[in-house]
Length: 203
Image: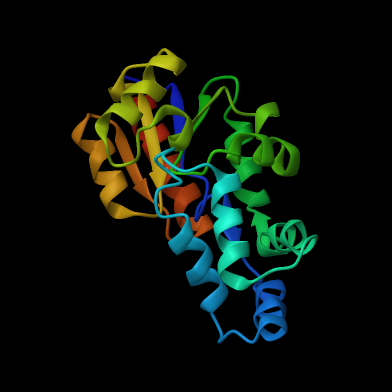
């Protein structure tokens, strides 16, 4: 059975935080210790990926905890994600698989992720379907979020490859019958996907 779809995680795979300079600048500005800003934001976002808390509420809570003045919060929001970079090598490879393979995304992400990713990384131009956990109230490794992606792509589990940097999420996909690749670095991930496509095509 040939592979007809490749489904990928976003954070840690397609997009990675490569530079924390802006976060460190804010920590110095607010008198925080190194790494404290990141801890504060993600603690405030504890229930954001499940859709129980909106992204706007996360940042309101952060602003309150840090005692930010009016006008500082939008600046912090922008700077906090400034170091995110798209893995252009991986995206180029994935895009080259179309139209023979459909491309999907499953992301444990906050409520505004879809619009932000579309604006910043143009996901909407090269991805057939994108499942964001906050929108569907499901979070990896819940099998239902993988099944939703398969339904939207109109493929069976055995016709799909799933890529994630978290092993537990990869194992959940495999338990449904999907091929699974754990992202460790870009060349390894591309090679693993190529091997699966070649072996399944030959089969």
